[in-house]
Length: 257
Image 1 (cartoon, rainbow, N blue to C red):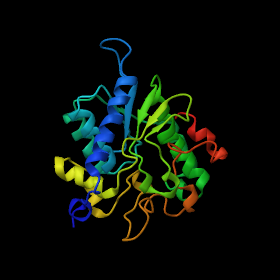
Image 2: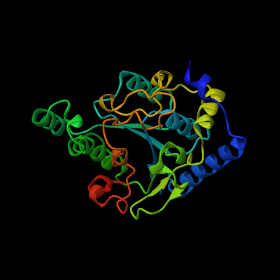
Image 3: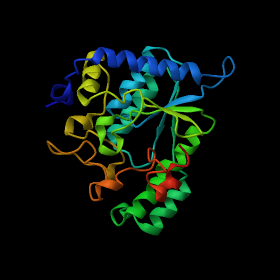
Image 4: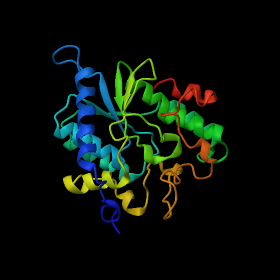
């Protein structure tokens, strides 16, 4: 069964949620747009090309907002994700930037630790995330006063209190315009607007990251059960959305955010 057929069931208050989301995106564009005419926007969407992110990108484009989009191409993404990235680059009104890890750092890590290092320890998996995600993220956010994510409270217990607008990081504001949305809302919007999405969602991948670290889930499993499934539940973040105060040992991973 296709993901749309299985999941497209909106909340009773979906229309109100959609208006709230549009308002949050408009605020992001208004408060963090270019400082000068023709200048670069100071806010950008971080897209992993998952279901939530294609919704946000569609809204940025349909509302003609002065917001950029960036993707972290880790060098380990699924072919389906790369194909969707190419489609986004072709069709997006908003500029789409792609950030990649430093090739020499990846080569040295793999030569030293092996292709399957992430399975051997949490420390090695996080070291891989640091090279492939966190360092490119730092470049993507350089000069930005805000960024936009697809975080939703429903995704996991660790994200249960995600605010629409997060100002806890002094370096930049994080907008989470889908914080209130349910999984059914996401797919309802995708179906309504005929949005292209990652076909891995049709294979029961609700959360899609790097290929070695992502698997399909079974009915009843947590949304993020398919990410780093060999690890303890408490460790299942790459660092992009980890709070330093909650996990002091991961402060180095959070620094770019």
